[in-house]
Length: 102
Image (cartoon, rainbow, N blue to C red; front, side):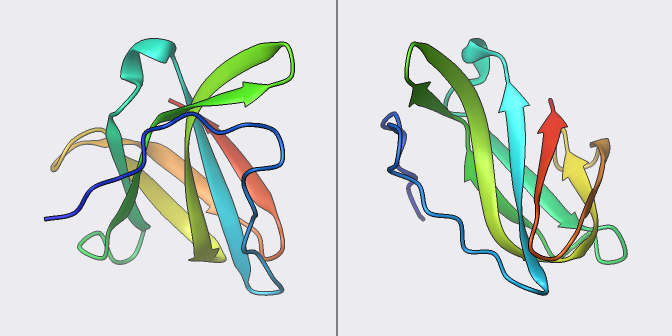
């Protein structure tokens, strides 16, 4: 059993852990998905999943909702809608941040 922080993030409160061979994935969602755990896996290894919860992110005069999954090795990833259904795919480049729309 584990729990996620679901408190909002504020400007400057998130540090990305990315490097030459690692990347971050930001999955943008609608506000109604707050608290949803979104899973991703390397496309070639669907059983090797990691996840993060959707949280509100306060950015100056606006709030967005997203899940931030990092660090991830660069490569192709499946974003899972549920345990058995892919939502889509994303390609992550080392040292970069990839954005995905849920």
